[in-house]
Image (cartoon, rainbow, N blue to C red):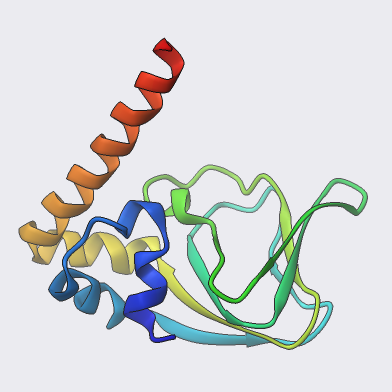
Length: 138
């Protein structure tokens, strides 16, 4: 699966056209991790999103309570693209893992350079907020 197809699985990017996905895919960097490597730590400032290309990671909170296991095609940290709140959990590699990473700074620079991408992302986020609001109203 290429970076554009993987990006399309992330809800905030799911409504973007191919040309916008391609621009965002171009700012992603591949990172690899060995079993046990910590990818992000609970409490650290969120700095970007990770899309898992291969392997598995565990999402852990506190004293090692495993909350979830994620694999190829999954992602984590997408809200860090918009705000730098502390990470709510630690994510560590459970096996050899490859991820595509996009930092908040690169994402914002892309939005500043390309209003069309910025508007497309904003429309997707607003649509998702509207859907969440409708669910709460039901």
